[in-house]
Length: 148
Image (cartoon, rainbow, N blue to C red; front, side, top):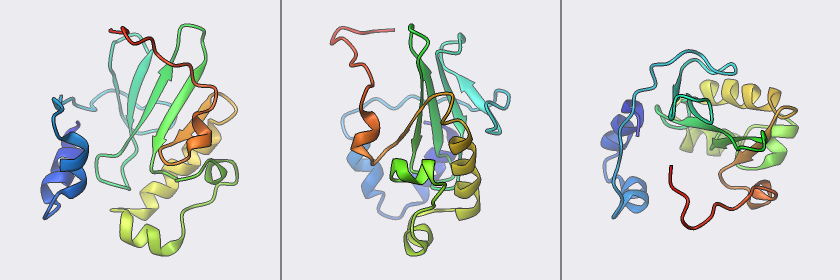
């Protein structure tokens, strides 16, 4: 997790979501201190080869990210988290409803900018919002023994 995400989790009074997703998992910290990447303000190249780049998106939470993955075939993916909840939001550049933005986002304007950036990349790669099961169609499964 990056510093912004850790701080966001720590500021959540009961941290239910963080506890639910992190229970029993080792949490690795990283710094998003690299250059801008595909319109996002800063990035972290996980392996140093561009195959997995984490870009700061902010807005939903202060440390929200987009994870860009390029597989050996050259196919590219952008896992955009909660910039929008449905793929339709990417294609039509539609934000989540107002009440959900107010309740769920730390900075709705930052989410809006991230959504527009992601939408502009949809002709270059497959965009995958976290909550749209259909958006995952066509992504190859990793072998069970895959390790990097």
